[in-house]
Amino acid sequence: MEQLTVAMAKGRTATKAMKLFEQAGIYFSSLQDDSRKLVLTDDSGQVKLIFVKAVDVPTYVEKGAADIGIIGKDVLLEDPKDVYEMVDLRISACKLVVAGFPGPYPNTQLTVASKYPHVAKTFFTNKGIRTDVITLNGSVELAPLIGMADVIVDIVETGKTLKENGLVVLEEIADSSARLIVNKASFAIKTAVIQQLIGSVKEGMGVST
Figure 1 (tube, one colour):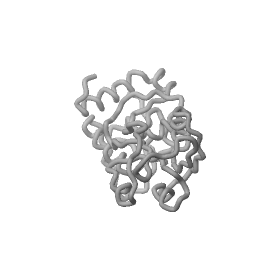
Figure 2 (cartoon, rainbow, N blue to C red):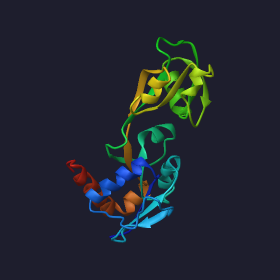
Figure 3 (cartoon, rainbow, N blue to C red):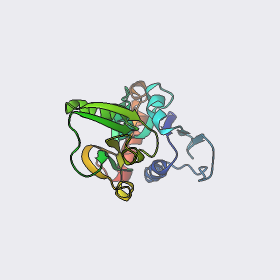
Figure 4 (cartoon, rainbow, N blue to C red):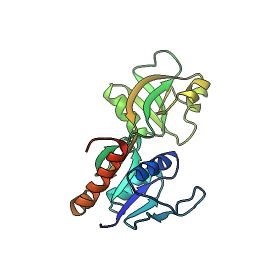
């Protein structure tokens, strides 16, 4: 079997993805919770795992530095890449939403704060609403509280942070969960081994192949 390189980011999604790999018979015994290693090989020597920043996963896959990537749909929506989206892994499920204070928001001109400026701009443009999008990378919920933005566009899992800050979901934009993506050239050259890995992952998930 040809070696495959898989890119993902460390964190909760990686922890869940590793369980999917184990269910598929792919084991990384050398992986330790406190390890700072960026490159690991599975016990069979056939799958190489590289850890990168979440937003960089699709780029590593698109450019061929990785054959396969595991990344949230929200990242793919924000920065679309020329890759194959093969499997919804059904982990790290959340929603991309518009949130703000309860009640209607202005429908002519909005100031929107978000770590997803492309998604936000596209969503409101399609609704015919002009926007001034402010890109923030953390504590986006703060923007409406201090009057910097009318609404925010962000991912929501439980809604607890919104609720604790007096904000509510005003509209849902898209569902998001971790996806398995594949480099197009890799899929053409390593079709059999990639399909084998995908089939094993699906079987471990209990999904018919």
